[in-house]
Length: 123
Image 1 (cartoon, rainbow, N blue to C red):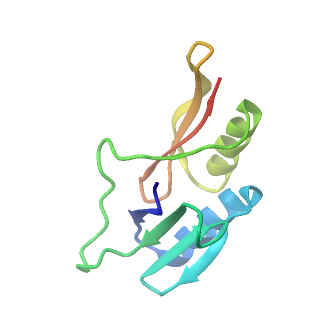
Image 2: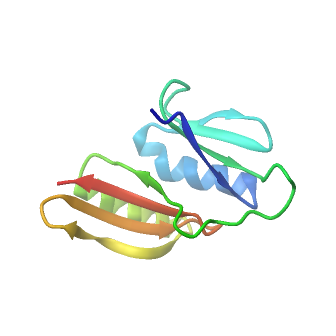
């Protein structure tokens, strides 16, 4: 249902590198780079993450309550993506853990621009 989610960034090169490195083990890479916006994903027919400099030329502002959720294949993969994000310069916004018993396991970070990401696993 979702084609892509766009987040605003202040430094395109840094953002492309951060997300390419973070999502490489999910087979994601920069698929289309149009200078002001770049699409990162497995292929153009699957859901993608787009990073962009705001169209109006104003500084990017991460929203309060906005979040992109990424679903690795297991709780261990959630932990690994959380740790990798931290190593790549993200900040913790909720360490990995079982949020809802037997239903939802998650971890939360903010990327170098302050955009919130979740890594989650149902179960």
